[in-house]
Length: 234
Image (cartoon, rainbow, N blue to C red; front, side, top):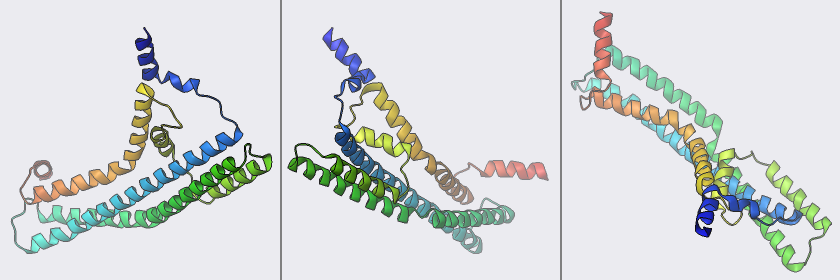
């Protein structure tokens, strides 16, 4: 019976409700640690988005250059000149859009700022640890000073997302005891939010790859539909 009870508690993460309550200083220190982890997660997320956006922009640029080179090389291509010219215009617009996105999003700069914020929060957490080791109880004046410093640090950078916080909950097992089905749902929500910004770039890369392989006659994914549309138009 106890085994069934423990299995049910693990599956529903019932043990989370039985955690001991924290005082104000412990809550502040936990908030500092969790926020630092969230900032690092946000920095990693932005840097990955920046790298993938740059890769997508480069891939589109290569396709844009490759099409006229193959046309001038007198290689037998499966698409007509009209279709190739149309796709060149489309790829050129995509390159322009991604260049603007990369320039305005400033992924690298934002990631560096979030990393710096996380480093400052880690230093603040160490200062709190030292103060607790030197004093049996933290005074109200010390608490107010630490709390003010914490507010100043997090106000200098953009906030993290809900997905960054959810990942922090999964990674900080000493602070958050989440197991079973609730843990899976948190993981699913966090990963879904992480993957959403990559959906359009991934589709664009697949489209470019399929178009080039169809153009060279390696595959036949788009070419039959284009031929059918051309016959219907004629």
